[in-house]
Amino acid sequence: MAWTKLIPQYLGIPYRRNSLSTYTPDDVLAGKGSIKAINQLTRRLAKKEKVDLFRLSNKEIYNFQKKHHIGIDCSGLVCHLLNLPYNPRKTNANMLTSPPLAHPVELTAIKSGDLVRQKNGHHVVIIIKKIGDQIEYIESSQAARGVVKGKTSLNNSEFFKDGVWRLFLFD
Amino acid sequence: MTHLYLGLLLFSFLFTSVLIIPFINLLFKLKFQRRRQVTKDFLNQHTPIFDKFHSQKSGTPVGGGVLIIISVCCLFFFLFHLLKFSQIFISTNYQINLEIFIIFFTFISFGLIGLYDDVFKFFGFKKTGFFGLRMRNKLLLQSLLALFISWLIYAGLKINFIYIPFLGAVKLYWFFIPVATTIIVAFTNFFNITDGLDGLACGLLTIALFAFWALSNNSLDTPISLFLALWIGALIAFLYFNVFPARIWLGDVGSLPFGATIAVIAILLGKIVPLIIVGMPFIIEGLSSAGQIISKRYWHRKLLPAAPFHLTLQQIGWEEPKIVTRAWLAGIILAIFGLWLGLN
Image (cartoon, rainbow over all chains, first blue to last red; front, side, top):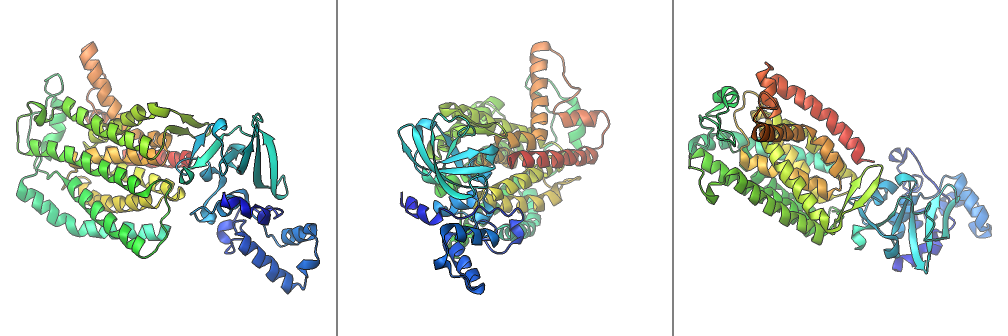
């Protein structure tokens, strides 16, 4: 569960998905950067524009990053947070929640690190932990305006409609 | 990695190209040649249509599968270790050693069954008893091997479901084993049946492998991508000499393992539905043959003028190259459709 220690660093990062990511050399601008790369680029741009990041509130940092197209998409978050041995630029939510990368698991067998497939493979959510009949999750989405944590019930059939998937690497 | 695989495909093509002419000469020397024969079907009745179209093919060396298997195996183990040694990142979704074992076990074990059968044919041994490998014995051996491979996939790689594009995963639990066994045995024989015209089976296989290569690349599976790149390269070199008029044939030593291995690759990639689409030409050929057998046995009449389906087309007057080229075109369209499905 070492990966859960990284969660606070990713919370609040804007959502970013570059549909032409292949043509963007920078991972961060493609929505696939690690927290280290995101922070480096943010600092570099702040220095260039003479903005003191320490004086900004979280909301202002979010707006600064959003303005400069800095952020992360759902599959990028999965790759970096779970430290997967795949190139984030070559992964997407559908791949991470379908064979041969992953296999379906029953709701009753959910564990930390499992992935919830959503929107027919266009979105993915990471399960942080299961508490009774509730689960805590983390996602990066347009609707949530970035990386957020959330809670939902195991009975939320709409949330789990496309199933829960476990990476073969985590078996 | 794609540029690396493309380079290795070309390397495999060159490697096999260099070896193929001496190999054809060797087959002539060893008399591994198609014999002039009077063919009989399973009811012990003569098959004059088959003999009519195949009599001019006697004398063609058979056993190209041996060269492809040896080239791919040697190149894979050399290049895979070279990649590891060069610290090039190897991504895989399963236990890498078991995955590689399953692929090569299929490739080699089915090849050995085919080789055994071919040797019996070349030297005209009478097919009696188990060791003469009659059709039912061959099926039994294939089923046992396929059962073992399916069990390895189920128990070792923990695959127990079928993924249906747009619908999701269907968990089969232990029932996955008989399903996978059936798929492997079916494709082994469907491919073997298709290998009846110059360049037909190999051309269709090359097209199908390109589709699966794209899918494996998308699945970030280095061993399968590398294996497919080397296999395609070797097949293209072989196909040059296998197109009409063929100077070499695959033989059972090639057709049995190739059918089985493409099925196993599809199962490992979780792309069974795309396999059915991409492999549709093989399925049509196999089912036409099976339908003919059932019809002759139970209704005592033929379903088609001749089976498999390519013989019917020959019988109605299509030239061999025309049938093969049109089958390739159909294969390309089906491969594109299968690829589209597989990416969903």
